[in-house]
Image 1 (spheres, rainbow, N blue to C red):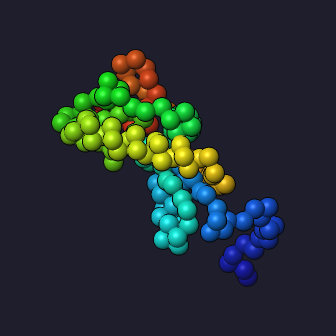
Image 2: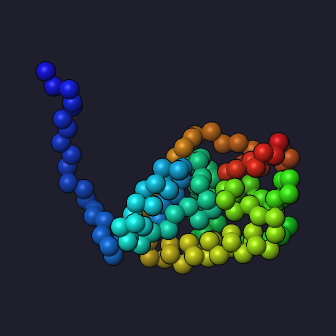
Length: 147
């Protein structure tokens, strides 16, 4: 009796090497992949807008980085004592709007330049559900506990 299913996988049509430029986008699984590759000294950027769970927000993140669409202070919202942006993960949240903008815009700019030579993109989707802010019905990556 066999307690495993043996499968044969064909050789991949591409290889990942130390000269590969890798972008990892999506759920927390993409972070785990990127962290392992970083530890092995691969050239990788992960989640320029932070962990992103749904396909629409992943697409929005890619578009923002390609166009190098910087955030402005008017784009931020106040949630409690923290400045937030609905397209960015909570790891960017900050009590200082200038620091928030600096961190977010630096991440966008770094990814923009990295994308010019990217070879491989990992995308992991955490959910197919897309949530929206009630005010304006705007799709969000992170609601930051706003309605």
